[in-house]
Image 1: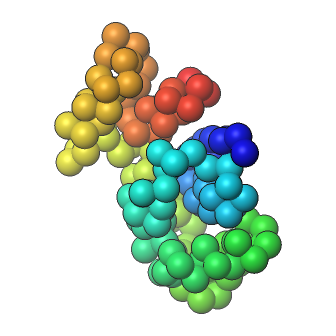
Image 2: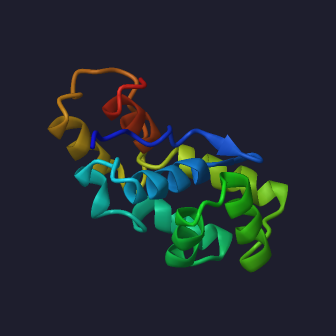
Image 3: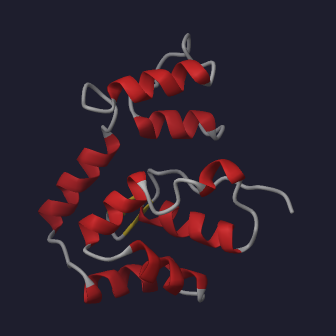
Length: 139
């Protein structure tokens, strides 16, 4: 089976970024279409942070999505089971996620990834979202 990239981390649902990507990775892995490069970090990194923000465990969410829940159904479950964040916290979360890697504790890791991928001379990759979109051919 061929591999596909998950949707952009910038994709949002109900004003919340990254969640559709998390669900997309779960479905692609279930269907055998997620590149092996992504398997080791499933449920970690930004997936984990998103689950923590929503107050749910990755495995129960993954089981729900693997069982056929849409992004909207999965997000509704998160809000019922975990935390239903107010709009101002979602705005904070979105800003936090969009800027990860820019002059923060992940800056060195981002610089390493940029160099390893051959993007060192490429302008405009300032955050991990930029890097992910460039690495997956969207930027």
